[in-house]
Length: 194
Image (cartoon, rainbow, N blue to C red; front, side):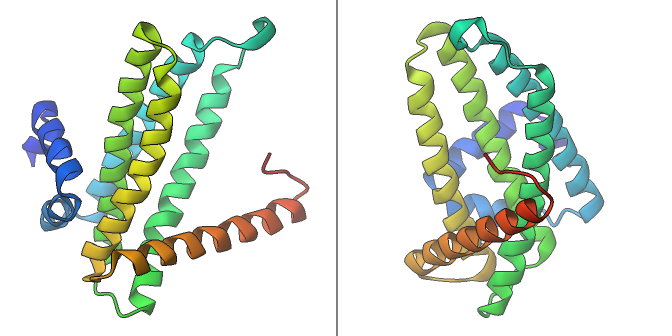
C-alpha cells in the first residue's frame, strides 16, 4: 500500500497506463482498495486539483486586468468532485445494465486514477504557462482527448467489453443524458450551467 504514496512509482505507472490503458486499469483494479481508502485518495486528489487550479488562475493572464477569485477554483473542484462520483457510479451501473461485471469500487478507483493522470497534465500545463504560454491550450485539448481515451479503455476493461467503439458511443450517450438531466435540474433550481 505504501507504494501508492511514492510519487516516482505513481508517475511510472501513469506513463505505463498511457501506453497501455487496459493494462493500467487491470493493475489499479487488482489493488482491490476498499471504499474508505478510495475516498481518502479521492479527497487528496481533489485538494491537489484545487491547489493546481488556484495556482493556474493566479498565473493566467486575464483581459482588462480582471481577476478571477480563488473561490472559483474551490467551487470548480467541488463540482469536479461531484461529477467524478457521478461518472464512477454511471460507469458501474450503466456497464452492469449491458452485462458488465465490474464493481463500484473498481469504477471509482479507475476514475480516481484517470483524474490523477489529468492532474499530472495540469502540472505540465502550469509549467508550460511559465515557459511557453501558447502551449497551455494544446495541453488542455490533449488532456480532454486523453480523458475520453482512458475512460473508454477503463470502462471496457472494468466490464470485460471488447468493442471500444460501442463503449465510446455508450459514454457519449450517457454524457448527453447527464447534461440534459443537469440542465433540467439546474433550470428547476433557477441556476444556469453557463
